[in-house]
Image (tube, rainbow, N blue to C red; front, side, top):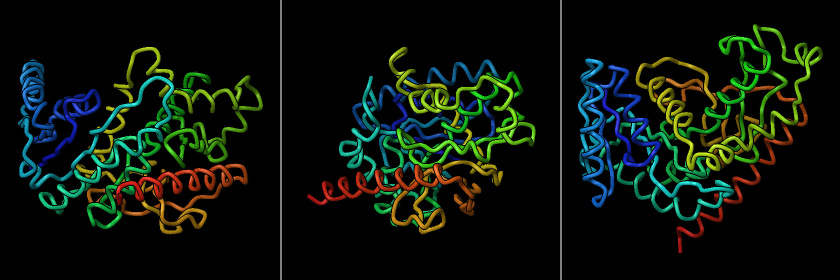
Length: 316
């Protein structure tokens, strides 16, 4: 039986992930975990989802819960609980508030679902990945942050639409921080197996503009509709399906580093990794241009500083 639990299931992202996973007709049971005061809302979400699933002849058990014991036997537990970002807020501004939530949830997961994989979506996701990793006591391969997976999908879309080429032909990746210090790996981006630079030479692609657009994507959507919804939900669902179906895909996720990329240690950042039912099977070592290396190291410095600050606050 495939079981997935979602902590923070009454939030915009949590409930969308739950519904997307239920519709796959692959997941047998989904626990919609919420605080006690939100339990009735979680129950209402399950009623609404059942109505929709019935129209598609899909069977999936949806379990509203505020009981940590219901996490038992989950293959994946998603942490998406926390204070959402608003307007012009930087993701890093949420660190102090959300760290306490993520730490407590990670501790409870370790008690009630000790064999699971923890997937962290709460922002700032790179900082929260380290908090969850240390609080759970799990091996680092089993604590994964959503990282730059969504950023990579966004860049893929931008390039596909600009060049009017099917997105399946675009192979690109974003690493570093899921935030202002994200690093688009344009030096290794290919279209139909051909390096991007050959396309840039004969097009009007403004590289600086597209990178800035990528970094501001979340803020732009939040300003216009109040919250990011479909993009993050589908990216997270894609990650969960990669894990439970043991697909061995290479995705840009946040994981705690031990010198694999540019010697960076003791911090969680988005890097390319092979993802399987065991979590991070292997971190892929990559060659970067000098500018990309510098940006990656800058991301490591920023996230390490914020993580250290948050960890000190948690000790107080």
